[in-house]
Amino acid sequence: MKSAVSYSQSKQRGVKEYSAEKIRSYRILSIMLISTGIILGMALVGTSVYADFESMLFDIALVADNNFHTIQCPIYLSSNEIGEIQATVRNKLDEPTERLVKAHISRGHLLLLREEEINMTIPANSQEQVSWEITPKDAAYGHLILVKMVMYTRSDEESSKKGSCGVIVLDLPGNMKGWQLMAGIIGTSLVASVVGLRLWWKFGRQYSAREQEAIRSVSALAIILLVGLVSAMIGYWEVAAVTFYIGVLMIGVIVPHFLISR
Image (cartoon, rainbow, N blue to C red; front, top):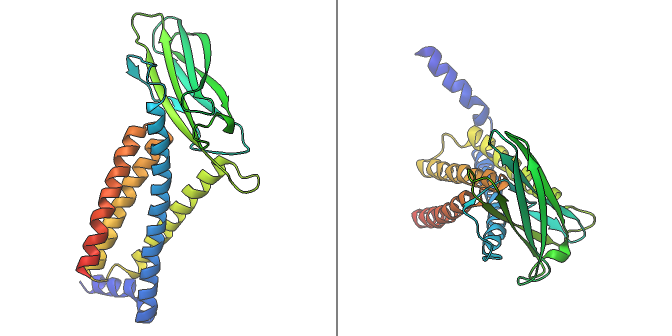
């Protein structure tokens, strides 16, 4: 018991060396950093969900039996940048299969599009990648490139599949690329969140129950947004949309709760 008490005291010694005002300042800073990380994460997930949702409504006449999530599009594209969309086409059968892959890409307007297609034979139990270039001139509304892709097969054992994605075109400063903006947002969000949690772990653990409740709520929100970010990156925009809406609802509950309790 004595050793346990002395260990606990030694754990708190580092915090006790600071004045109460400085400790409180660090606690406030930790909350601000964590909130900044969450806001940036929500902005990234939200814009990704918006672009992908718009792409789902694009060219609704293009139908298929099932959906596939192997389309890869950049989330952001600079107004002076040429981007690329990709899709992985898989053949899970024990024999070669012929595939026809079509991509419909907006061409400067919601009602205009250009059609690209590739005929290919995929060996048994393997996969191939297809890709097409996109440019800011493809953007509908001046800021949103919409892509819908469909895959047809002659095999009776597999059905046709379709997928979609959207790319947001931004006027970025200098020669900055869209992927650099995305990497910057992700990096800043992660660094701010990690540093904020580290500060809270050191200076906030012994604080009031209300503050402990706040950090638990914010941490849960951060985890949900991380799931949404990963889902958006790998093409599961539906999951990203659900996590984003849950995040918005949590903010709508958390903020009024702590304002009222204060």
